[in-house]
Length: 72
Image (cartoon, rainbow, N blue to C red; front, side, top):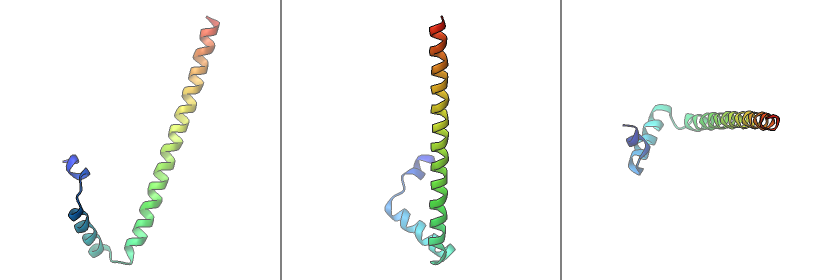
């Protein structure tokens, strides 16, 4: 089921766009696209922040491990 969702062909995209046009109207679609873009940017920023925190945490742990190795 999931693999079929990932492989959307050209005609399927056209049908989806037509359905969206019918549901939301031509004036609402640009507004929805902007909202989707903002949401994607926020999500990307959040994931980058999480990656940054994880990298900083691992650096501190590695430093602590090296300090312990020196003491031993």
